[in-house]
Image (cartoon, rainbow, N blue to C red; front, side, top):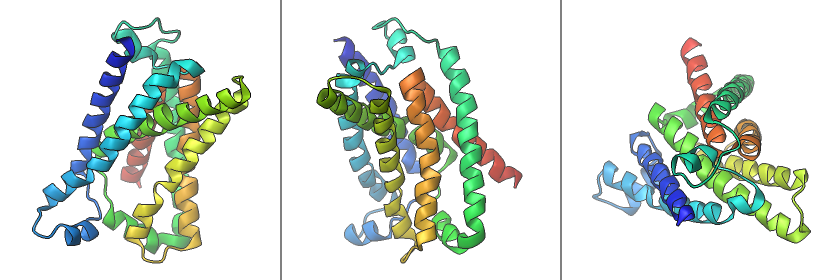
Length: 247
């Protein structure tokens, strides 16, 4: 019953994050051909089906396994009165904000460096995919962390711990690296949808740019709890948006 409460809470939070994709500008040309006569809003609703299914799977897996590999969701568990957190939300907030801002600054610097060589390709992606601020904070900060950290990373760590019969630091790092790699590769479909023949440099940028944050968020999930990773992901976007406005 306790895990059910946690899983339901996380799924509802994630579902609210999925709905924020309705506020984003998405590449819908292919779907418009598949669903002639459908409005853009209806097509966007159709696009929410897959992330919702993946969210449900991630929450089910994460809820079943997270405590078996000493990973935590301390603040939400405390609010639901299903655990005694070893770390306060204030501590999570401090770590999440500082490391999230660092991640955002690093990602922006990487983007500025690559823009010197692939500015036209980057403009093509930006014209096709424009996430709103709400989607960046809620989908990125909540849904992606539930999918990649709570779901996938937890599963990888659990599998390795079963194979080795121990929980080593390297076990968690493998989970962090694999979830980060999945996150980075997950941006390739949008890249190919936006640029017909993306260059090697563009693909390198997409991979590297989306790996920096994942390593930091994964470490935070391991050391500080899921909420810290979510906060960091959000504040990475705060840093990126702030620098964009300044530039």
